[in-house]
Each structure stands twice: as C-alpha cells, then as structure tokens.
Length: 193
Image (tube, one colour):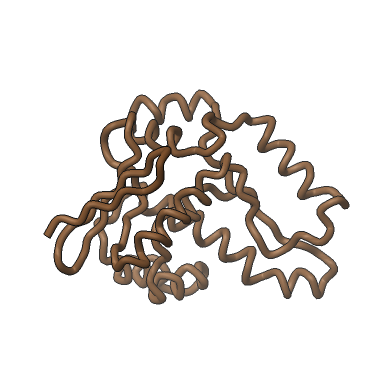
C-alpha cells in the first residue's frame, strides 16, 4: 500500500531518485540526506517513502513478469478512519484537500479493500508495474492544475495552504511569488513580483 502522498508534489531530483532506487546500498541514509535540499521532516520522509514504493512497482514489473508475476500498489487518498480524523484535527490544511477532491468526500476502508481484492484477483491479470490511485480524483485534479501553472513557469509545492474553505496553492517564481486559487469557474493565477 502506497499513498496519494507519493503522487503529489513535484518529482524528486535525480539524485534523490537514484538514492531511493538503491535502498539497501551502503550509506543509503547518508546519500539520501545529502541529496535532499529542503528541510527534512516526517512529512518529507513519508512522501519520499511512498514515491519510492510506487517507483519500485514500475521498475520491477519486467522482472516480475518474467517470473509470471505482477507487482502493483494501491495509493489511497483521504480515507475515513480514526487516524484520518486525528490528521484533520492536527492539520487543518487537509480540509483544503477534501474540498479539492472531485467526488467531494473521503473514501472508505471498504473502497481500499475492494481495490486490493480486485488487484489480487485474476480480473486484474494484465495490471502490473503501476499504482492504482483510490483517491476520488484528487491527484488528477491537482495534476491538471499543476500542468497549467507550470506551463506558465510557476513551480508549485502542491500543498494547499491555510483556509479550509479555499483551494489555494503557492509557488515560487524566479521573479516573484504565485498564488493559485482553484474554484468552480476554473483556475486563477495571481503572480506577485
């Protein structure tokens, strides 16, 4: 089981990906730590571990296929669990993610179990080397906004900021700062120089 966190945000640098691709190498943690330029915290560690799991599924598909096997992962989005409820209390920004989820609600544990059951069945015999997003469309909606904005030269962190009633993202520009608001009418980009 991976996570939506492995799909959000910009892709890691090639140095980070190189380290993640060799988790059993001598000096793995030192190599990874020296490759990360952003502040290191548990959120970054979680996202990178989930990114690495998704990448492992992609990279090992040929090897598994040659043995007659498959390799897949499930990437849940916001799922209604007791732990998820605590996360909403601790991180109000999660309300922004919920608001940005196209289906307009959290998923259920049963939805994740159904996805795992399907992937483990013969009905999914042609699915390998990928992660199934079970996120109510959240990663897709974020990706569409990110492609539009990055096409304008803006790099987004991918993290909603502050007000749970708004869909706001922030990004740095070489010449200033950008705020992006997603609403029912589309995407508004405000560039501050």
